[in-house]
Image 1 (cartoon, protein in one colour):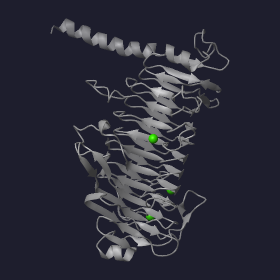
Image 2 (tube, helix red, strand yellow):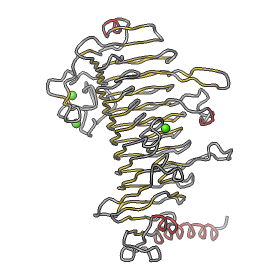
Image 3 (cartoon, rainbow, N blue to C red):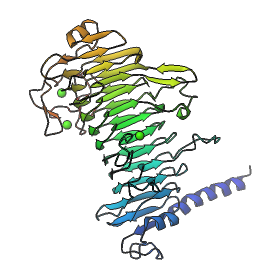
Image 4 (tube, rainbow, N blue to C red):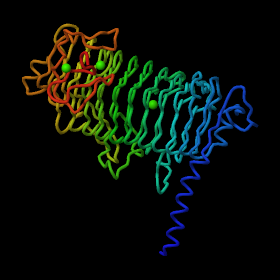
Length: 446
Ligand SMILES: [Ca+2]
Ligand SMILES: [Ca+2]
Ligand SMILES: [Ca+2]
């Protein structure tokens, strides 16, 4: 290549970069606006639909305080949609009882790097927010949208699931949102976050509550999920699950020939309370690590505080995919029902089970532990006598129920955790990097 050509290519690249920066637009939208106007702050548009029609990659849509009709599909990448600064939070609404409006905000499979922030988003007959995917279409490059960010928003009152992520929705971040009131029309299948093979996801700092089925699950072979520093409460099924059940066609068999529902997921620093099902579960998960969570009054009617479970599949023959190489430590687990604090269900486990430094409590008496793989049912003493759950103990954790389950100064959880590669607690106070940390999501007076 000649030097001249080279220079021309470099010049073109610089021009493209500058062009993109210079041409990136902010579209203002106001209930007092007009879709025929310029879309500037002084002359705003009226609808989100009009703003999405005009927006190009790299643009920003600012919604002034007010109520906007949703039922939109975003196909433009590198787009920011948020409430205008300094104003009220804008509401994007859709009905949850109209089968013609399946989703409030749909993110198209090519709309990479979309950011939704500071919005109040509600409704949708099935989903409030859903990503699209070409995974099951026979496309040569099956994908969903990558780098989706959903931050600082209220997302609620869905017909079924509040947020639904479909296969190869990769590198998403869902952080600091309040996600609530799922299942307004279909309460039987209505998670807070239902993610199927959504790889490299981060779910952080959300408050997820009043969910008719599971608070959060990442399944379908989701790789490297990180679920941390969330509050999850009042769920009709479980709080947080790594895995559960997905149809065979959603798995990426190139990286997951074993049909695991979750691979290398981490769940830490979460508070989970008042769940009918498990507090936290490993469900056909490979190498899940579940540590420093506080589970209070979980497993009220189903499963166990901590759950280890497998999943049946036809792959093509009938097979049970167990969880494998499960690690659970430094968790506070309080159960007030007669369900176990810890249960390994039938065919639920292969490989290692690394349990330690958990603090179990059940109505002031003996805790119930059940291992249907190892053939055990009994209390913690006999469980530990089998070489299980080193340094775990049975005591009242002494947490403050009216203050996010912070530890009282008398709590036996203080300084009884195993050292962990975790420099912060639930509210990002420092944990000591060397030596014992506290059990549960909080570091005392940290
Ligand atoms: Ca669901
Ligand atoms: Ca400490
Ligand atoms: Ca703290």
